[in-house]
Length: 208
Image 1 (spheres, helix red, strand yellow):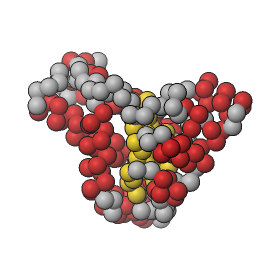
Image 2: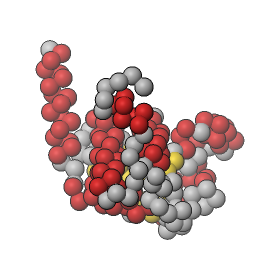
Image 3: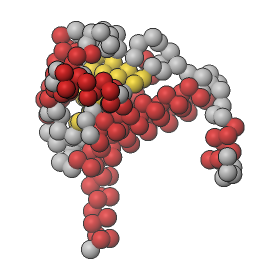
Image 4: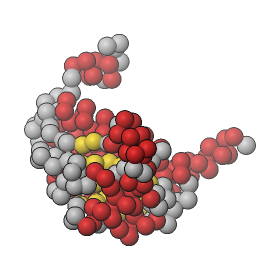
């Protein structure tokens, strides 16, 4: 019983991954790369598990590309509990992200929305306000795409009605992009090698 459920989960995960538009993945990759080395920022926004994924991507990309000597300005406001609780308490949780436009999120920035349903009200309000200010937006959603699919300038649709698998694939997409860009920078000799400590621990299988 347990083994069958595991196999079924694997099957659904792979089917969903293989159903994503490759063109849309390449589009997001190219857009993230275009922001590297600039003063413009990438903001990744989400709720719940998607917020955790946004924090993960923020930390992952910041550490990796900084280690390579590359410049990327990326952040996730979900890791600022002081701001989120203050804005929610004093204003409204539905406004916590839209409030940041245009004071903190600027016209030349990129906002990436992570959502299972695509219908989270705080993300929708932020996307609508971003459109008013002509800010570049990209959403990654599951189910039927939700309202974010219609509002955002760019979109990746994960065609499955399963929140856990949607959140799994969010990270798969960004891990792929990180690996692709890392390999590209290293192959072009534009970047420094990763730290000796990292190589020792990961590649040489030594305690470091």
